Length: 97
Image (cartoon, rainbow, N blue to C red):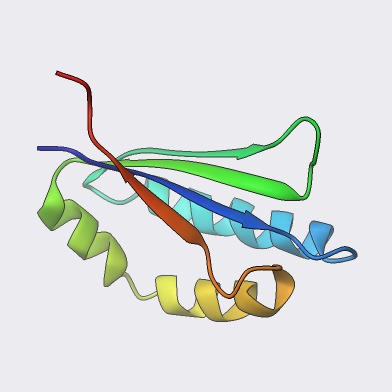
């Protein structure tokens, strides 16, 4: 079964450009993962500092491989001081049947 989630966070004022740069580089790498089916980055129209990232992985194994990718921890370490939350807020999604 596919693994689908929404990651949300808000860039701190003044950190918008650095967050966008980090996300562009990270998104490129994640999209190259064998088990990644989607990694779509959005900002809210009413609040461009608020990010929503829609992620879909082939299955749980592909998601676990994503979590172990060597570029994930450095990305999260670099992102943490640039966002308002302690970390990205993750919401896991299930398709309606």
